[in-house]
Every structure is written in C-alpha cells, then in structure tokens.
Length: 361
Image 1: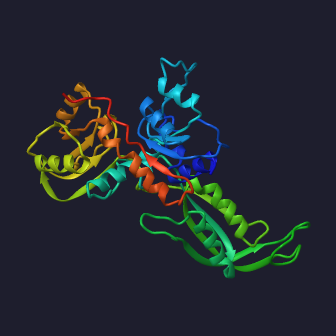
Image 2: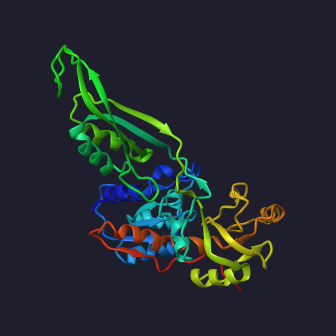
Image 3: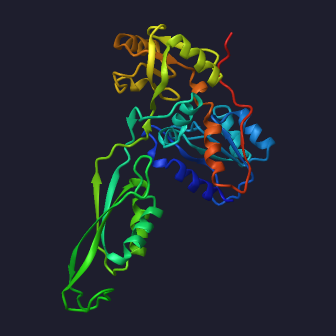
C-alpha cells in the first residue's frame, strides 16, 4: 500500500479541507509514492514516538497534532529534534487534527461514546457547503441515475440515506446540426415524459457526484442544476449531548474520571450543580465560550487560562477544565477504529509510549 492511497482514505474519513484556518493538517513530510511498511498512530510527534515507530518497523506515523503549525525556514536538530529524527529515519508523517475533530464520527463523537453518550448536534456547525443537484431524465432511467448519485454519496440526511425527490413533467428540446440525440431527430422539437430528480450533496462530494451523474445519464447534454442550500449539519466543532438522567456535578465528575482514566479536573462554577445537557470540545476550546448555548449545563474542554476562567464564572458557564492530553489521548483508538473498516493490508498500531508532558506531584 502506498502512502498516496492511505492519504486518500484519510481524506474520506475526515476531508482535510474541513480543518480550521489556523491548522496544518495533512502531509507534514513524506513520499506519497513510497510503500508503507506499518502505521503508528500517536497524538504527538515526539522523540519517544519516533523511536517507537522505528523499533516497530513503521515508516509512517499519523499524528493528531501537526508538528508544523506555521511555515519554518529551517529544521535544526536542537530546535526540532523529533522532526529531525523522523526525517533522517525516512518516516512519513501525516497529521489528522481539526478535520478529524470536526468530522462525523470524529474525535469528539468518540469521546462522547466513551462516556456512554450520543451527540445531538455540534457546538458550532461546520462551514462546509451543502448543495442540491437537480437533473431531468426519461422515466425509465430514473433508478439508474439515482443509484449513481447515491453511490457518489448523495442523498444523505442525518441518519437516512438514499434520500431524493422525484416529480414528473414534460421536457422539450430540439436537437441541432451535429448533435447525436438519445431521443428524437435533428431539427425537430421533441416533447418527452421526464422526471425531475433532486438530491442533497456535501461540498466534498459535489465534483464526484456530477461526474457520475453525467456517466449514468442517457442524454448527450443532460440538464443539471446545482443550488447552494441552507442545511443543518450534525458535524462541526465540539459536540452536545444529554445525559440519561440528571446528575450532581460531583457524581458526574467521578464517573467522568473513571471512564476516561483522568486523574484530575479543575472545576469552574458550582460543584453541587445538577447537570443534564453537556457540551464537549476535545483539546483546548476556550474560544467557544460565546458559542455555548444557554441551556448547556456543563462545558468540558481544556487549556483554560486564569482570565478566561473568570469570564466563564461571570457568564455562568460551568466548566470542567481537563488537561489537553486527557481529552485527546483517545485519538489513536478513534482513528484505528475507522481505519480497521477499510481492511488495510498493513498493520496499524497505536503508540504505547506517548504521554502527557506534565507530571502531577
């Protein structure tokens, strides 16, 4: 399996264009035409995890955090020791960061699953555009065209797929000189029983859908309309969920620590508050404080600064400040679960050497 093939699979799981503007997900270093020996999944690229990859004969690492957020002019061993070690050992590096945070079934969804919860909606919807494709086909070709569109990932709405709308009508056209009409003859206006077919498609799949539609459509020049549509998306930044039953915050914290193997949390707000609806954003998402709905009882994230904590307290946003690593350490298992569905011909292993940079004394 070549690195290029793996990159395409990752782009299917969580398209790289979904990433936030500040991010640098994608290929950090590597040869897209190289053969992969083994893949190591890790939250961060460190000297320890690079050594782990080398010891396991893994020439490809997928990290959650990019090793390069901004352009760099040089790679000096003392300044970038982990990156230097990876490059000099010929290890490919792909980062899978905010695109995986935002994607359907991504890291936030997986984190909720660990807590035994299901997402009802994101905190902030993805910026990805949604389109409606409309075409007109002869009645006997409706199923052929619909199937082609569905195979191109059209017609998915929430927990439903193969969604479409069809309506009958009369199509008119006159083939001109040089045309090769599927129906009718040149220079004669035709009136044909046709069906209007409408489907929803995500921005990531639009070009593929149009290509497959044209292949399946019997007409030489099919009529195709594409409209931008307003559509609520169940993926984006963070995730909101509702507990099976209301809990005292103290009780919830004990359950949370047990399920996530977290040693400590910091609480902003009333420790005795009863909570029912929670919002989660893995990593550090304190910038979302103005986006948290008023009916959310508890916000879970990390990297809260002192002044941000004061603002949260003033706004009444009860918050669990969990160490950044503790919410994102599940990246490995979350992505492996996705990759296993592709039945790859190479081994995918999870890091056993990664750890938080902090020691609690």
